[in-house]
Image 1 (cartoon, one colour):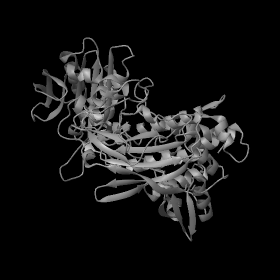
Image 2 (cartoon, rainbow, N blue to C red):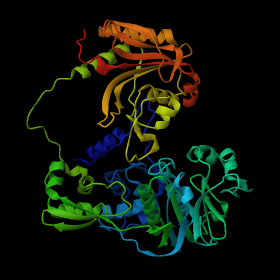
Image 3 (spheres, one colour):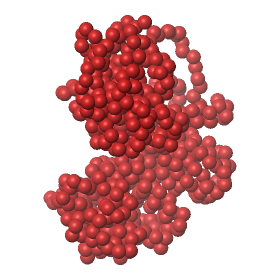
Image 4 (tube, rainbow, N blue to C red):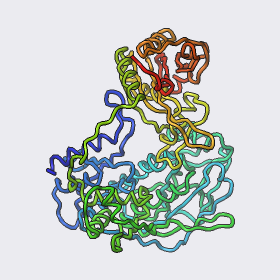
Length: 582
């Protein structure tokens, strides 16, 4: 494959990974790491031209957006949080270019300090892990990169601090052991980070920007989490803010790391990434003992996980031929420790690789390590022709009708947040939760389309009104004791000063006429819609409920940050799919 063609393919892959809704509005943000070009080059064993360096990053899935001048802007896919800094990117590039292939090993010294965990944190934020670093070397650039890594981990693996938050502390003046407990927020005061005066923890939620932004993570609990040292000095009020006493500066050489959260596995993963970053900055790593009543564990655990990958399986999934030695080379270029075992390989995966959960993830790494440009396209051996299903034909008819009514088609994610579906819109009946969500914004499967459309409208308040948006897509309904079921829906939203019941009723009736379905309207109530200004669409004769429509409740508009009246509808396409349409 020619190099230009390869980059066009990579760019198409990158853009396909982002969901664009309306006029260029992105739903799924990809973290961008700003890296000094000289930092990357200085950590390589030989001089590498910019084009080769950019190509290596792109092949690793880290697409350089800007490569001119001193600073490069590099997109890092959310599944690789272990590459969210210049130093960690350089580590990956060294391996990928074959300069330092294989698994990097970081030595962790024995625990000399402890964190004592009080049972009071169990209800609010139960998990904590930590690490100690000595002799770290910081300057302005390195400190900025460390802080950016911290915030990117909060956004991704941390699910906006709900699952995980990271505290970095100058440990020079601290006195271990540390205590992690839940306290009365009105009785504890300290000077917050970059603050000048003491204030209570409750006051911080009202008066500080970060406090207001993350208040929902602790509000509703009588006691809030706090980390102190043996002299009662406050390190942190997780997940809100650190104390100013332990501010990390360019002069800091001793660092204590705390990672707290509601997901212990995610806490451990984040800690391994932060500790690896500090090791890359010259720090000597030490473990910390986490002491709970009746139990004691030592963190971080940087020992690799071990997987066995049959090479035939990798060949089958990738659809091409390569040897066991090729597989070893490819996986070593991806930073793994690899040992050949006849027709399989034994792979040691770094603890910081949060994305490797299964041998199939290693198959992806084989493809990246071999190079996507090595894979040649081929035509199918057999030509087959499929027919669209009745449901797809129906969806296409709905799209044509709504487009004719002036609606603009959108596509939103089935993965969404409980906040959007329940807290803002009021969806009832339960939602299907994702077991290990990457982000709190994608923690459940949606039960209605209208909240997604309202969220989209909220992202487009800078656009002119009126706006008419629609989507044909799936919702997911839970089944008690069984497998959740996908349901096909069509949803529409009118955002306009004159949006109201009459207008949206006319649009729904026009859609049903075009589909050849005789309907009648019956008043009723529906979540998210104004009581008395909402109705159900019933099939005439059978009385089957085909959908609902109405004016969006003002409290819902306020929750979404919308100031213009809205009216919307949802039609249950799965209830229509077994019919014939003209």
